[in-house]
Length: 325
Image 1 (cartoon, rainbow, N blue to C red):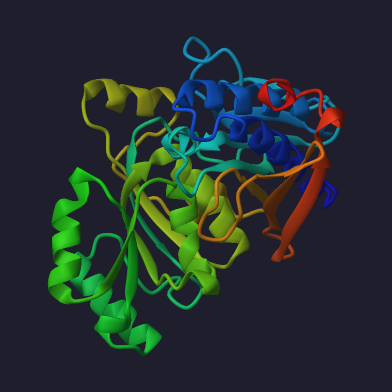
Image 2 (spheres, rainbow, N blue to C red):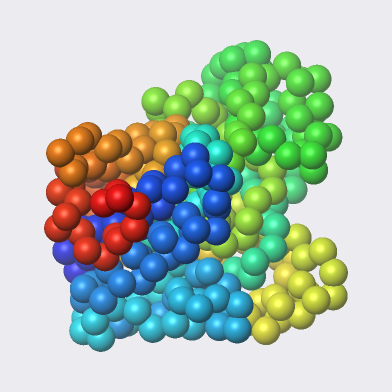
């Protein structure tokens, strides 16, 4: 894959973020998601790849666009796998909360896991802990090991976890052990990336979230020298069958980084829709301009770019919608 693709895909997440941000705080998550998806799909027509969506808005009969198996790009350039989440954090946009992103990962054909839409148990860490912890260890053991490797007392260890009823046992364990906890209302991808970003103050990310978001986060962590371990959590026979249809022979296998994003090159781009752990949200500046904050990364070079862009909205016809009203 050519390095120019990094800038091409961040233009796609920027447009999706601008489209979704128009619905911030309006209480309609479906409209926000639809706006982001429409803009992202249209913008992909300018990207020089022969892309296949392997993680998208659903299967063909469930999603009108950016469905699994859909072809994207202008048909020129390399054959690539595409993972997308046009709006990661639909509730956050609808309610005006933090951590909503527009996200894309791209890798050579055959490298990205075709993750079914179900929960995945996850353990995400930064470079100092990569390769040193194991998802199958009891949580208390994981915390003790992390504190030892980071050379800090348990009371100074900070763990992020989604604030969900299913995590109450883990949250009680975290409190009993005495670590600091940062509860996340939404934003599974941003949460998993946080341990790799020193400014976040997060040491580990634990708990379950969406499997597709796990693959997206693994792509980001590949670029950041972090690590994400995961295990699918099929809840019934229907979800087991979905795993097998998507080529996953052992649905309960411990998934490594190589399992999720391969061992070759990968690109990752994200644009903030609402303010979050490491990216600002879309800001409307007046005079028909808006500002976006993005991150774009490449695993091969380990280059991480933070991009601030000011957009003149009348020149963005693919956005459509509310800002002109």
